Amino acid sequence: MKPLIITAVFGVLLVVQGFIGCAWSAEQKPIATQKSKDLVITLLSDSGQWTQGKNTFVLEFAAVATKQPIDVGTVTLTTNMPMPGMAPMVAGATLAAEKAPGRYQGTISFPDSGTRQVTVTWEGPVGKGSTRFSVPVR
Ligand SMILES: [Cu+2]
Image 1 (cartoon, rainbow, N blue to C red):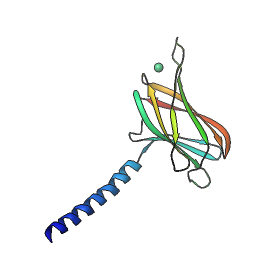
Image 2 (image 1 turned 30 degrees about the vertical axis):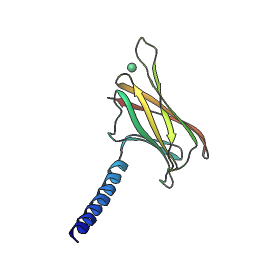
Image 3 (image 1 turned 90 degrees about the vertical axis):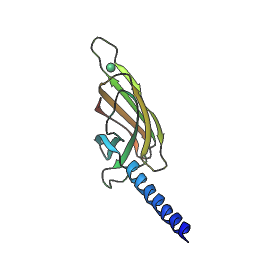
Image 4 (image 1 turned 180 degrees about the vertical axis):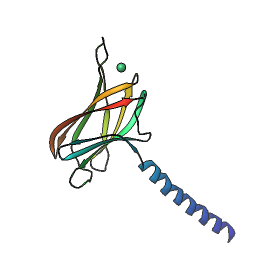
């Protein structure tokens, strides 16, 4: 009887740990939030910031009216850093749509730190649009 109880308790613990794990991984911090007409665009990551080197992040689109994520179709994210006496440094993100609407998983690499001008574009169910905002790379 005892081994069965231990197994059951262990099983419950694993399930609880699984829930906590999910809650933690879902809790990403905003890097930047930008409003564009009827949309709110939020850039998120585990650390809440972009740093030199490779970064993973989530780009989320929500409707201003409902605050619910909304499918915007094809999305691009490019960055640019004007540098004195040099050609601007340009870096683009690789984006993949999540199963959930309005969320895109991204990766981007930065060779150095400094403020980036970020341009996000979208084209799809809610039409075509773009917005710009700046994000520091630390
Ligand atoms: Cu640079």
